Amino acid sequence: MTVADCPLYVAIIGEIGIASLAVTTSLTINFLRKPSATKDIIGKFTLLKIGKSLVVGEFLYILKAMTKLLPMSLEHIQYSP
Figure (cartoon, helix red, strand yellow):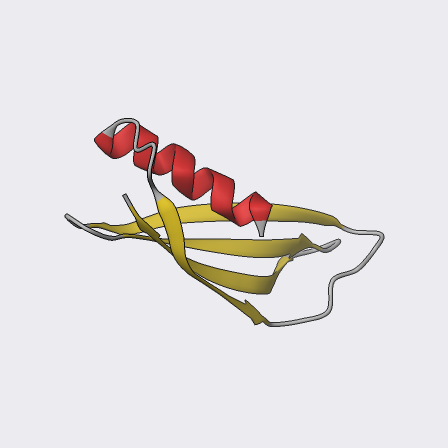
C-alpha cells in the first residue's frame, strides 16, 4: 500500500504544492493474479483527476515475465488535499 500511496502524495505536491493535511480517503486494491517470488515487479502510476477537494490516482503493479509484462494488481487511490 505504501508503494502506491507515496507516488500519489508526490504527484499532489508536484501539481498543487505542499498539502500538509492531505489524507488518503480511499484505497482499493484489485488483485488480478498471484505474484511470483522470483520475478521483478514494476509499478506504473497515473494521476487521473485533480479536483478542488479530491485527487484520484491509479497504481498498476506489473509482473515482469520472461517475454511479456503481466498485470498483477490495480489500486485506485483518492486523496483529500
